[in-house]
Image (cartoon, rainbow, N blue to C red; front, side):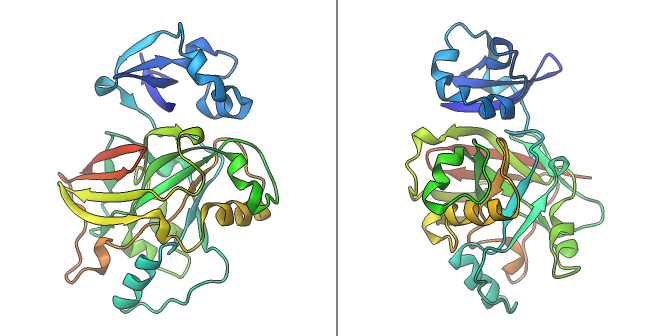
Length: 286
C-alpha cells in the first residue's frame, strides 16, 4: 500500500493511493488525524480495508503533496553511508576515514518539502547539491532495538532528496548547517508499506537532473545497513512512529565533479527508487 500526506481544500490530510486517485483516510479515520498517528496506532496495517468506502479526493496528478510525514519528531540522516560515495569523497581530495559507528546528523521538519513542490536554493548559496536517498519510516516505538528486531519497527519506505547547501555544510566538521535550510530536503511522493518490500531487499536508486542521470547505484552499497542504523539511533533516543531515517546517498553528487555541478533555479531534479516511485521537484531561488 502507498500512503501519503497532502492538502485537501486547504487542510492537511492523508490517504492511500487507489489506482490514479487518492482515498482520504484522514476523513475515514478521524481518531488519527495525521499519518504519523495512523501509523503509530498500527491501523495502517489494515489500510487496504480502510480504503473501502473512504472518499476519493481526486487524481494524484492534481494533488498538492505534503512531505510524507509533514512534522516528524526526528529526521535522522546518515553521512557517507555508501562505499561508492566514500570513494568519491576520497577521490575529490577530502580525507575521511571510515567510521566504526554510523555518522549521523538531524534535520528539522521545516527543512522538508514535498513531491512536485519546490526545492529552494537559498540566496546565500550557489552550491545547492542533490543527494538521492532511501528513507525509512518508523512504525513502532522502541529504544535499544536489537538489529534482529529492527525491521519489525519499520512502517515503510520512501524517496528522499537530502539536498545540501555545500558552502554552509563545509563551514565546520558538523555539517547540519548546510542540511537544514528550509525547503531543501524533499520527501515523497508517498511511503510504500514495509510488507511490499522484503527486509534487506537491494533497491536500485537513480537521481536525474533535467533528465540526465547523475546518480545510479543500489542500496547494497550501504556501509551501515538499515538494522544497524536503527539499532544505533535507538540507542541514543527512543524512536517513535513517524520518525524518518534518511539512509545516505551513493556516488554522483555534484560537488565532486571537476568542475562542480549544482542545481539552479529552473532545474528539475528526480529521485527514483525501485519498488517505490519517483520523487520530482523543481528548483527555485529563495
